[in-house]
Length: 263
Ligand SMILES: [Zn+2]
Image 1 (spheres, rainbow, N blue to C red):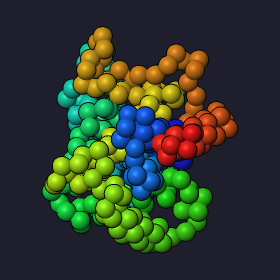
Image 2 (tube, rainbow, N blue to C red; image 1 turned 135 degrees about the vertical axis):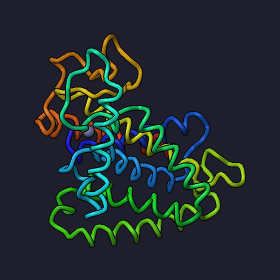
Image 3 (cartoon, rainbow, N blue to C red; image 1 turned 180 degrees about the horizontal axis):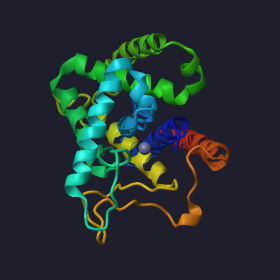
């Protein structure tokens, strides 16, 4: 899928988590619902850091460009080192290491650890990165015509404001993990979810996605998971734009209403 569909499906998934949390008695304060949806929307672009023309690789200027090159090389090296007898030869790292469940768990875990050990600046940094990505994903047309610096300013100011809102008592910094010292531990959850939703979105396209790595399936360790061929579509096709994206919007709306106990 393309960036906007990834971001929309990410946001919808978090709103669905909000509905499930409300049903389970852990109702999210509204700032957790909103900030979590934005983080998931941003995190749902992150796995494509292994592709130089992806939104995330262009979103932070030379920093993300350099990071993209490192991630592509690392992914390719890991692919070569771990490929099974049935895995095909490849020439690059796109849709390998960063498109697995293990990567999702590792970056989400790293974000949670950073949030509880790094204090306010770590929280602000996590929010900034994901809010910039959320703007790029959800407001793609507006972000494309505006300058990078404006998008960064928008990300920085909204990170500052939203962290201030979450910090208010009862507003969500201690949602789900309530013990002292565990504030913002939940920040890793939307990051894991965003990456997994991205992988599932890619699995629906023609080439599939090796989500299960390093668990082998048959002779392949990088098995490209996906539905039967007839149910797959090309990235950016009409199915994505006219069917999936409106569906994500409706599901997200229903999820949000249930999460806030409106329905
Ligand atoms: Zn991808």
